[in-house]
Image (cartoon, rainbow, N blue to C red; front, side, top):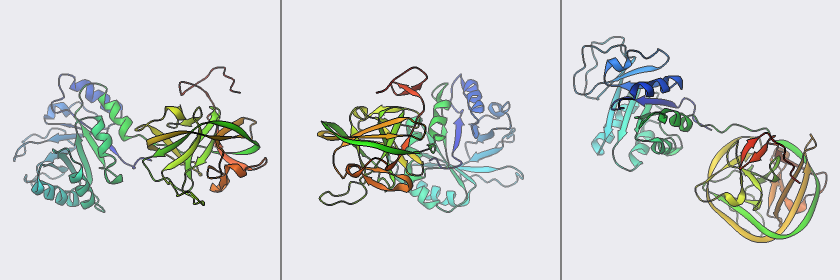
Length: 365
């Protein structure tokens, strides 16, 4: 899930001849703030966006225009301007400026930080120093990829990011990163109708780069219309150590959810891809795939039916350490399932073409 209140800021300084188009795009996308160093660039912006004037040097200009917020260096005196909101801007280039940034984020309403070295350690230190403070931290980023990284530092990231766009469309890309969220999904209770041995074949273990919870796994199924929640290897059994990052997911042709909307075949997943981790209460989060292990194993076919009559199938490795989740997060060994048992599943509700939902005639047998 996203952190509430994450902000998108657009930097018009040096934005080029298309700065007006970039500003219009940001306003349309409900950006929280637009930054400029010329009051004229803020003059026509609506009050729906915070108009931020960035002041260079040690002196404030006589005319602050219609700026809602003025960014200044820490050395600038802000006295004599009642009613004007001020924020501080700090360039972190060395130990002294890092100490200054840590000081400002504990005292100022808004601090905009720029980090010059290719390491995220200074940002980690600033975020730790700001823990518990009421001020907001905005970090300058050079591109969308850097924004993605900043937002995950120390699991919380800054309160917002300031992007100097490289062209029209970058504002839209930034919102997709900053405002990305992973919604809850409505799991259903499926009733097992049959379990049978199904010969041998290749199955995939999905090893993620995250510790998975005991009631968390990924949704897997032979048909795109119905998936079953396969639990992570977070529960002990004899002979095998726990692998809390792993889901022994199913046969390689099985579908899984790469995100709330798109399916992937298990055999398509690879290092660096994402897959949707799902908890027994329907909460979701994207996790990064670190590895997919494909090996030949005996297979077990599980048939189930939804309350709506939708038939669901899951083919997994035929072994008791492969588990699925039942209502309430009950952990069920797949080899011990029998008709009448209940498991948790998900009905996406639409057909799929190359993973995308589509409304068309499609029979999956």
